[in-house]
Amino acid sequence: RFTEFHRVPVGGTNAHDFYMDSANSIFSTLEIKDCAFTGGGKMEFEYPSYATIGITNSLFENEAVLFVNSSTPFNLAMRNNLCHGGSYGSMFTDSAWTLRDNVFDSVSASETFGSSTHDHNAYINTSTKYFPTNSGDIVLTNFTYDSGPLGNYYQPTNSALIGAVSRSAASAG
Image 1 (cartoon, rainbow, N blue to C red):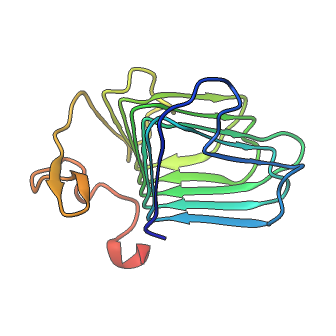
Image 2 (cartoon, rainbow, N blue to C red):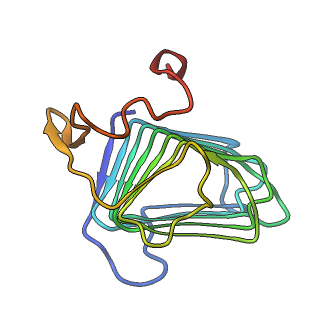
């Protein structure tokens, strides 16, 4: 918790900051919470058989994040995250996947062959919107962040995103 992973980008398709697959999964639950991944790395979750993955309140800055599912389903819950720059993708999402209260800012995003529960996400300056517009989604062409004691991604007091979430802060924990 409260960990920052930063690295200089390394070329090649096998350069991963984090990689989880069915052959190398030695745990059934992975919880990433209050972390920052910066510097242009790659995180890939490929066929992590029957795992449960929770990603909450984390920053992915210029990272490539990919979730791939096949015949061995896994559960994924992404809530209250910021993906700023980089890319986000999911393939074969026939498992119990939930994406809520996330911000995709200047991200190349795609979903292939599947569906997931997704709503109350914000899409800022993102030309390829990841999901169809849901009533709780917000689409913006630009957004200005404030700087604060823990980084450069604080919402200003007049932000269109304040209160546009699926649950209260007290319910989120």
